[in-house]
Length: 305
Image (cartoon, rainbow, N blue to C red):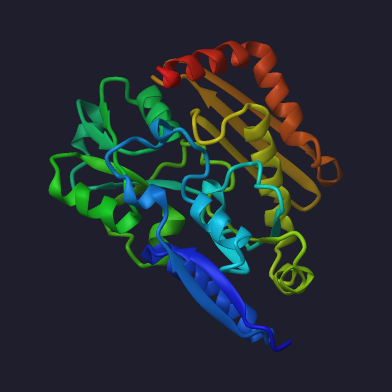
């Protein structure tokens, strides 16, 4: 038990909070840990929208390389930032119990713009499409950076509000009083969940981290990410998904939007808990068969320009 587990993380406040949370849980189980912070390309290049950088997993790539080189043993991520296909040799070791899944609008104390014209900021194609679907007269501007940076940019600009994941702001006590829950917005697949990845051949670390796994969250995020992967979303299409478990039943809601929010494909499924393994895939195929594949082709063409 004397091996120190080196935990790789991005160096943003939220990422460090996540890494320290995992470190504490491992320490409580008797494992010594060390936190190794790495700057990711996604944090450094802030002047380009994410999809223009052309790689999925821009926030996870730097840590993947550090793990493969043996500089860190495990890495902690916001699960919604992690590509659905992990690099060869790296495996999902645990999914921690999920926090709040809701998106929120942080505003400046006045919501009159919701009935007229407004400017909303977000770096997410999913949030943008859903916002424009509901508020077609609004303008949506790109917003990048870690949560602290984005909050400051909202403060410094003439925007009416910006969309954030509630979980991220709650974790580092940044959630202001001036916010509303966007319960009509379908969250990103795995939103509110943290994942720990390890090297496939590292039985010691995998065994240690496996004790942190929360089965219900693992099942729900599996369904959501399978839906995303089947639609070939990566980080590049307006796709939302949420699975919830109640007793022995799973309720799944998935959406695919056009980039401008005018076109919406939605699916809802309620199945028994035993049938979760293929649920995401089946739901995605249904969406694809009912016009989704035409839309996905169009989205890819648009984003490649």
